[in-house]
Image (tube, rainbow, N blue to C red; front, side, top):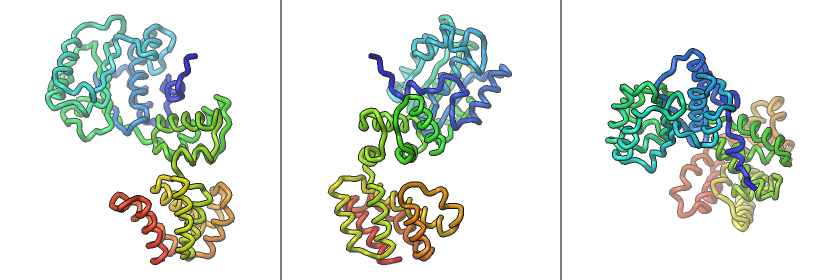
Length: 361
């Protein structure tokens, strides 16, 4: 059985399927439609947001046998070979493992040979910022006057490390980090099509912890499906991500705001026995403080956006605790999160942060 992981199975195969990058898709599509074809593109952005995917779509668009188009047919031999990673005229190079100038010169020595059966020979250089200075110099000479049958697509997660002489010779596109809403909607759609049971809170947790990366989101989703034996539930998500339960997080928030140090330490000890990522304890408290503060400022509208089992309790705290105390507590915990790396241990850092909040607010 040839199982295909979700990140590959659901990789966009047309520009219409790309989410969250409308400005780039529109610009490239118009470029292809107008036949104003550049010789080099530079795609930058954090990991897992679609740089390689857009590069492959661009390669299909340039080499599709029906002609240069923003809507490749996906049926011709060239399109199918690019999708399967078998096209000899679409060369993917990992610059992280080929940083030496000898590697670059070897590649550039071959660019003058015509494509085997495609319109263009296309080089995708991934993590291009990892190239050495001499490699960049060698690449620069080719970028200045490339052969007509050659196209370059450069991809990087660190734009600042690429020389300006390189970036100035490329069409540069900076991909946006995907919003939690975009990721959530995609995960929901995928699970519906795959007929996998899920709950909304689980998808919200995954969408948040993906931190804008759709690949990370799909990998987390895959992990959650395996952990839940074919379905997704919040209990498995909490365990997988090392999160404190929603119940413990709310009790901690309430104990801090009511200045109950004894109860705070008791709950922290209970959490310690379960095993969590300690930074996540502070993050979950910050989420509750955020909802409490918003409920205070927008009591009529914000209550509709609060999900979970703590809607009424959040509203009750919002009415009984002073707004300034909530803001001060939030600030203390934000600072405590920054200071965790300086603490003897993360557990001690969390304990000291929460005790500081109790003593100050």
